[in-house]
Picture 1: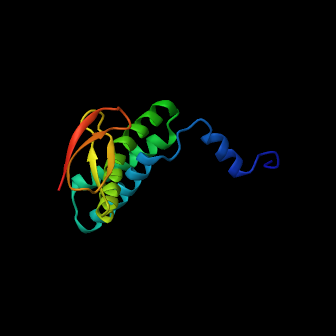
Picture 2: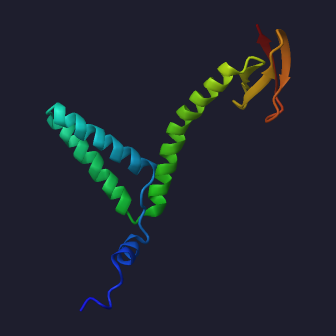
Length: 138
């Protein structure tokens, strides 16, 4: 009776074809709901339970969604928004460790420039936009 059926792994893979699957927002929702579930064990609150269920439900919805293009666009916007903080924190750590250079932002194109640490006022040409501006290094 069950001899012609493919193994469970193949049936599951066939079911998941064309679905979004796990992404960054899914991971954040799952971990956040797990934290809220643990907090809910110690702090009995209706709001905590509703947030837990809402985040978990949204994560499951994203995982099984067939609108892959829209979910990818949402995930990319999420990563762009929160990736900015990660890049900035890494950049600050790198700048603190670098004692031979000073970091300035181009006022025209907002590019991050690494300049040699030489005291005084200098005119700098941005390599990205070719704009010139003055920089005072103390």
